[in-house]
Image (tube, rainbow, N blue to C red):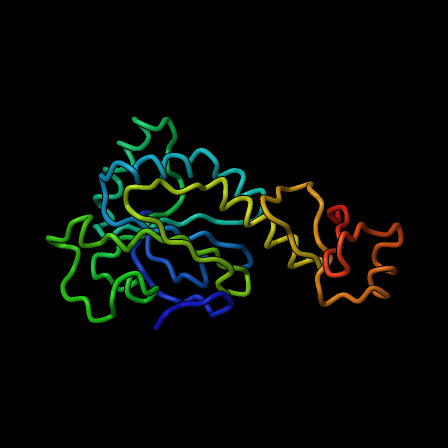
Length: 219
């Protein structure tokens, strides 16, 4: 079954580099970024994990936790982490899931439910679709899904940008326009009538079209 935005993120129990976790319990009242990898010791993923280690404090500021997944044993993750720190200049402090039985990959529709076997003998190519990012809210609902090809490194600055937008629009009845960044003008949501908008935004707004009402980002 495919997963869509606003579906409840499937819960699971799994071994990680930080010990066994229950995913929903681990999220708690935070946001979570789950990002997956086809196999340990792969070049593009090495750069991604290192970059996420560098910018983890930015996610922490936003009350968001990071958790990686790779279809290899946890013991391999620990060895890979040493390579990541050596080559990328940052230590991986967030947990990494060992998905040796492919259970989480199947649960999140990254591999077919009927996929046989375990991680043993599998290659990055056979796990090529395990290259996804999920943003999960404190309500355990999926807020974003992205899947990248193996040869294209993911843009995790974009994940931060989207998280800023999701958190802002969860608190205020606004939407963010194309290429929006924190501090830029926003759009009044279509669910807000002009009469309501006058109360919320007494200083007014710009409206090049009646349906396109632009205001400063709420604080």
